[in-house]
Length: 299
Image 1 (tube, rainbow, N blue to C red):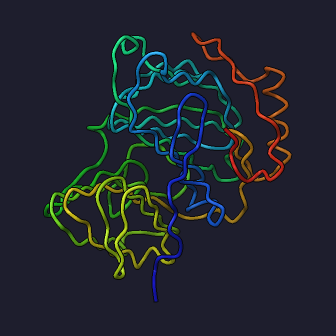
Image 2: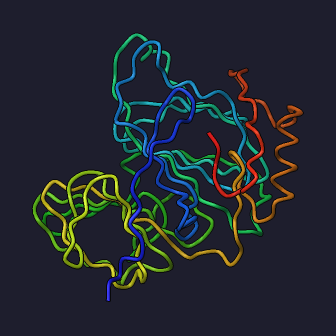
């Protein structure tokens, strides 16, 4: 019997002046463990006038994780942080009861054509922490656990697996692992995984259960403990997942919550300009129309 429950194809989504590949949520699978939203940014060439200029916007009930392969993004938030995100670093912002942030092309790159490529991820917070105080952590690439097994290299971006723990301060049991194979390789991770598990192929191909899967696909496992597959030489992929929550999560725009009323309160608060401001950035993104389904993020 196959262990592959769902295969999700990357879908185009417009987040303003930038097109991304939407991976989660998906109509048949809203979450994988606590992971509730994943966008694949690029690869794209950034040049005038099409810079990344995502003005201040709010979040509640989640942690955002930005991980770049190429390029740079300037992060500013209402906590007073101003950090340039570069490839290999982890930008982790926990919104809790409410935070505002902006994401823009750094000033020094606005006269230079450059490439941008990466992942933007939302991790929902446990119900008892949805109203926690917001915080921010930036972890540089050398701080992330990494190891090799034969011709395969591993990097633990967030969470914990097989006695490896990332310094990213997560709030529920989860894992996000980068795996790269220099040669054709067999991967057996099942005994180290837990909860729900997804596999995203960035480059190359994966062979599993007599089938071949390529870039821009997510494979969702029925049982994480049965996670075994073959990687072709030159393949890069990401395994993510963890323990699912007992309660449903709802999404409205940039807000995540375990009850709809909290989303309505957050929406009204943003419309009234009651969220904290971002020092050094006075932009503002108007809130889009109410999503009647409260199940998918509107652009």
